[in-house]
Length: 121
Image 1: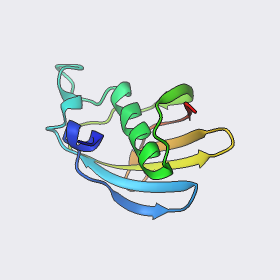
Image 2 (image 1 turned 90 degrees about the vertical axis):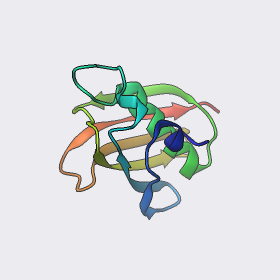
Image 3 (image 1 turned 30 degrees about the vertical axis):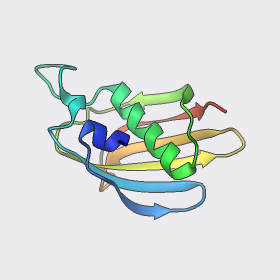
């Protein structure tokens, strides 16, 4: 079972894809287990959930099957709420074995998180 199915996230749609960059749209329903229990009074996806999603897509589209070794300049600027339509932009740097990301609304008018990380070699 892949990460999306495990957490109840609907499959993604590829908006664009090149050798070193991919953009995907996906929907996170209110039933996603990331929303359960983090903040009982306010449902949002915790930072660790956002990172898990980013690493999953980096591994899937760039062919890396490793875990995140180091995070750099990661910022969480707005909470991801239930029933959100999201866009994730990923760009890899093969030499540094790193990925930069931006998580936003699908129209890219609101950003939720961004940063970069290095995957273990």
